[in-house]
Image 1 (cartoon, one colour):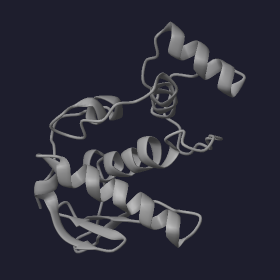
Image 2 (tube, helix red, strand yellow):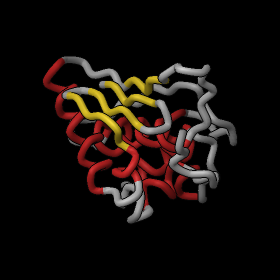
Image 3 (cartoon, rainbow, N blue to C red):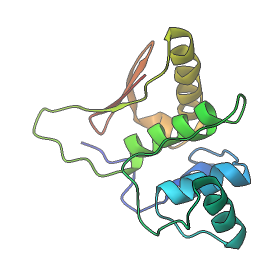
Length: 152
């Protein structure tokens, strides 16, 4: 099995790195991801997180979150797709011999699933690093060489 990376990298760095995802985030998107993953926030990010959650953000990673976002806010492209890719490539997974792990990204219907699958596939295909680790591609799934499948 080949690991995509051996160095610890946080989600914001992975998203911004031009050799990994090469994407940009709005201040709100970055604050949301930093809060979700327990990453340090600057003063403006902490204030934004507090305003959105009604409390001061804790410096801890959350196992789940609900984001209430408007149309065209980037919830599928900038949040969901990037989180799925990060979880599939950069998190340690304890798999038994022969087991394949699944990073599941759920959509509200088939149309939305196809849109999100396009975001995930496009981000991985344009990445000089990540694209090398796809071993199989189906309509709504990508198999990676680390025994993880991203499924939408």
